Each structure stands twice: as C-alpha cells, then as structure tokens.
Length: 342
Image (cartoon, rainbow, N blue to C red):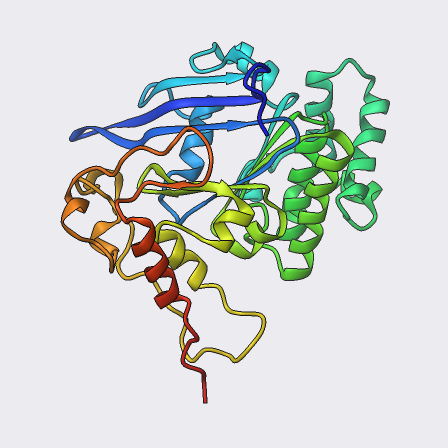
C-alpha cells in the first residue's frame, strides 16, 4: 500500500506532451498520471507508438526542449523535476534515476571503450579514483554476465554482440545503484536465455539495493514474470492500471484483452491461430475523438463517441464505458477455448 504522507519516489500528475510540427502542435501524451514507490516493479505496456517511451523521456528531460512542450507536474522524492535546468537534472539522472535505452548501439559512444564509458559515469557522480572506478566497472561487467569482463572493459562497442552491448549498457545504468531504474525494452533484441538473465539481474537490483524499476515493454509474458503493478497505454493515455494479479486475472479494457489473447498458451492444445487486434494504433496527429481505441474495438457502442470517464485515484480501473457485465461477457468470449491446430 502507498503511504499518502510519505512522498512517492516518482509522482507524475496530468502529464501532457506535445510536439511542434509543420501543422502546429501535436499532442502525443494526454493526461497521464501515476505514482512509483520505493522498491516497486511497475510495467508500462502497449504497442509501439502508444506513448510509453515518450512519457518517461519527457519526465527525465531527454527530449528536445525547442520542439517538445511538457505540461503537468512530476516530482522525484517530493522535488519537482519538470523544467529543471539541464545541469541540475544531470545530477539526478545517472545517479538517482538511471535509464536503459532500447537500442544499446546508439546509446554507446563508438570512439570510446566500454570500460571508459562506465568509468566516466561512475566518476561523474561519485568521488572515486580512476582505479577504484575501473575495478567497479569490471565487477559490474562480471555481474551482468559478460564473459572475461576484464577484456570486455577494453573493447569498443562494435567489438561486442548485440546482447553483450545491452549488458554493458545495463552495467552502466547500475553503476551508481540508482533509486529508480527506467528500462526501455531491455530484452527486445536478446534471445530467450539472455532475456531471462537480464530479468534476473533487474530483480536482483531491486532485492539487493531496494531500487524501484519501471519496465517499458509490449511483452506481456515478461510483465507476468516480474511486475507488481501494470499500466496499459494506448494513443498517449493510460487506459487501464492495476496490480499484475488483477490485470492478468480479470483485464477490464478490450485493448488489454487483445494484448493478452495474443500470447501463445504454454499449456493445453495449440491454437490454430492466435487472436489479433485489427488495424493499427493511430498517430498522434490522427487520434479520433472520444475513445481512441473505438475504431479497432469489437465492443464499441454509441457512448464510445465521447471521452470515457477518468481513471479512479487508486485500484484496478479502465478508461472504458463498458459495465462489469459487458466486460465479463467480452472476456469470456475472447478467452474461450480456441480452435486447435490439426
């Protein structure tokens, strides 16, 4: 349970993000609010383009301020961070809040070795000698499972495989034992074995250092493995949120049903064909009025032309007009025994 008196580790309220375009401002994130407490593992899920990454990049000040307009509030341990000068934000980023980007190749500087970049990160935020920082960097590379970490320390990014680069980026993010780690699709480019190792590493960070973790992903299988709470995003809004147990036991939004129905079952007969969500997500410039998911939803009806009621302050809730009976019937129909393959 959250403590209403103690400040949240990260508290975001009515976040709105828009971008300048040739046709004027386009809103990509609209009225997103959430709270992350110490030690929580929260997953943000949704298809590509739903606003997961943009939300966090905007909060961390990693968007271009000349073309990006951020409204609302965000506080880290009670301190407002939206609009902070870059110099002050850099004292927080890397040390107290770490970010694992989706593409490890573009996150690493090609003209410096892996070890140099980790040492730079450590010495930027901590008063330690080069030798102490190097020792710590090699320990981190060993911790994330890189073979022969002392040799990997002196290698350039192009000399490592994609999975090894991803581990090096994770080692850099963990170097200052951050209070909050934002991991953007950290397992996307990895094979299943390495993916499991990375997830174990994130869970160990939480266990050993009490770090909170925000995992941005579209993989509901990964979410089921690690998350305490889940936020589902679509077209720049949070459309459902609740504990992982609640989301997987009784998802309330038709979009969440579609995400979960597309997961291949691990038990029982093999389905002939997995259900899929028709159509594609709207672009920020073409979000329809009312419920943005309505054009793709098999359960849409007249009220969907208007904006669904806001999510409640706490508990399991969905940004949807369907009542409890309609939701139960919709879930039952979608998750009924599928037609099996011959």
